[in-house]
Length: 121
Image 1 (cartoon, one colour):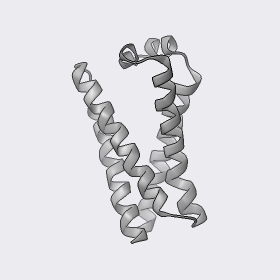
Image 2 (cartoon, one colour):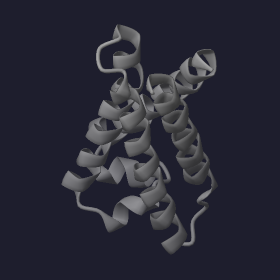
Image 3 (cartoon, helix red, strand yellow):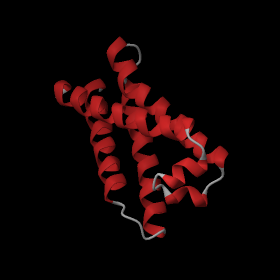
Image 4 (spheres, one colour):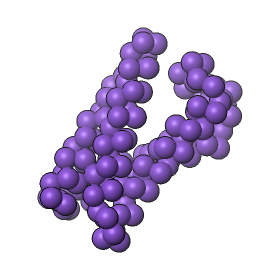
C-alpha cells in the first residue's frame, strides 16, 4: 500500500505544483487567456491564495512522508486538496464547464487521504 501511496502522491504533487505555480506566476488575464474562464469569478488575490494552497498541498503530500516527521500531515494535505478540488468541481459545474478533471483529482486526493490515514494509524 505504501508504494501505491507514493505513486499517487507523486503524480498529485506534480500536478498541484504545476497548477498552483501557474496561478502564482501568471496574471488573472493570462490565466483567462489560457482557457481558465473560472478566473472571471475570482479576485486576483483569491486566485493567488488558491495557488499558494495548491503548492503547499503538493509539498505536504511528499515532505512529511519522506522525512518521517509527522507523516499524518501527508494525509491531512491530501484531504485538504480533495476539498479544494471538490470546491473547484462546484465552480465548474455552476459555470457549465467540464468538471471531470477536477472531480477526478478530488477522488484521487481522497484516495490518497484514505491510504495516508491507513498508513499512519
